[in-house]
Length: 210
Image (cartoon, rainbow, N blue to C red; front, side, top):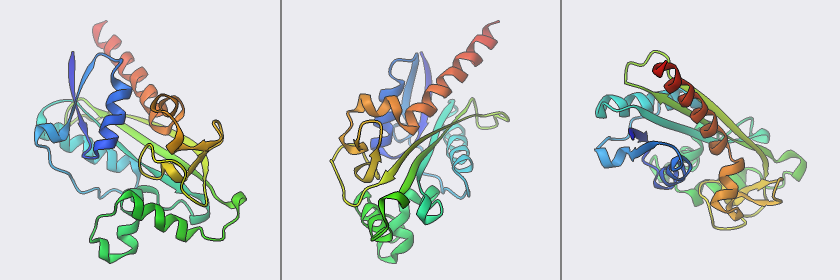
């Protein structure tokens, strides 16, 4: 079973990705178990940030690495919070001192969209997954998944994480926070990106064995 370091310090994200990867022949080890520190996300796109995180984890551990960079884009806010989704409230309010929890981010998003009609609350989750065989990998595998929906006017449900209580999923007619892990994995941005990644990794393994 091949070991791969998962370049994320977000415990809920690690859990979700590990569950999605459980059926594949990989042993996923969170970077926190290998003493890999967080690396500053200095990129201006999801792709750049995912590569930064994957390269750092691979460099420290010597293992192949998978990194995720994801967030939510709201059309009315011209794509914000985007790559700043996890620290949205911290950027808006200096009192958070660089950190923001899910509730603070959700509260700020509701404030930004106060009075905006339903038809103008379209949004989507974006996920970029990057796989690097080693820190100097010149051709990392890059996979993208998106999930269309809209922002509710109030939170619904307490499952999931991030903006899930505010993200309306038209397919199931409920917020993402009310979906079971299995339902979410089948249609989410991260689930879509991961299935593409698994196809790419399978093709890579087949090519190496020929």
